[in-house]
Length: 91
Image (cartoon, rainbow, N blue to C red; front, side, top):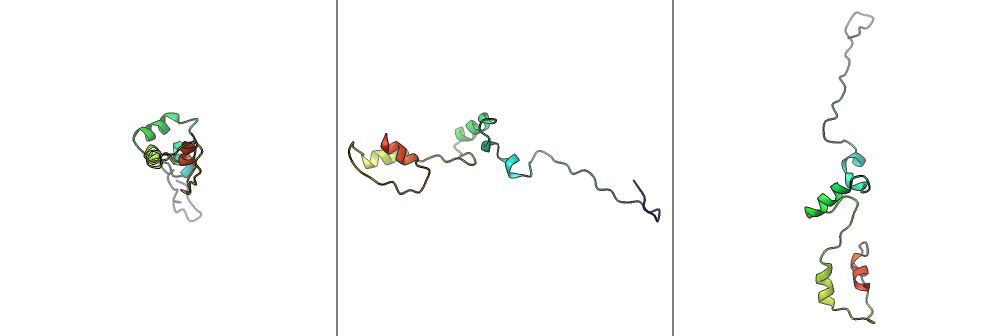
């Protein structure tokens, strides 16, 4: 320890332990970097989760079966998502 002018020891803070839990958003969600952490993204999807920063359309086949879309029909997808249902309808 160092001392000040009055010969009193100066308190010096210890180095903060970083541990295993990241403190910043960009360190926490590996899914945001799928090129580097592809295995992590696949693991989250296999467990039934949606990786951070991604969107997975749900019940696509059920909706297609319900609507029974035929070639030449017109429709409007107003689900306000990422276009997953619309692209399936167009196929």
